[in-house]
Length: 161
Image (cartoon, rainbow, N blue to C red; front, side, top):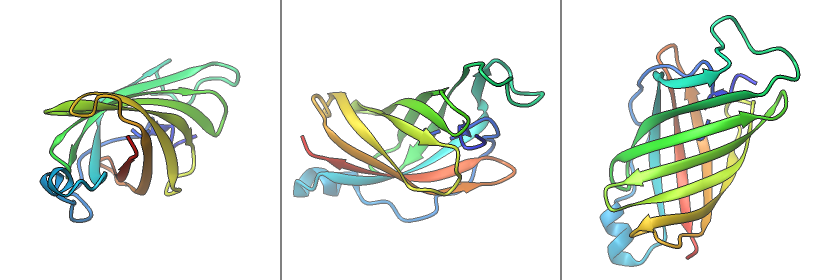
């Protein structure tokens, strides 16, 4: 459950800023070579996450829907922002909707998020705008790190359309 509250995917205890953990692949290289993949390094700050109901005194009672929303930033593949919501549908699973906002368009992402920290998760690319209009493919979340200041993780994006 903690991951739902910390994660964009993607959680409650999300806090702070941490440096990128790995070198990013160049977005320009992605465009020039026709390669349809890129890696983003995401940071989510606690101040940029809200929950309904409030979780300051712990998780909501059993059977009560928990909504988590927020934003973060990413580097690699062109810097940008991630905006997300997670509806916690069980103790260990939430439904994620996210938008990756680049300066030349957006990519929309949907899928299931689990409560386990550090597991690899896969989400569907369901569309996009601008340069990414009609985008399809898969996003893989990995390398999730929680600190007292926040959460960072990598998103590997594989575009098939």
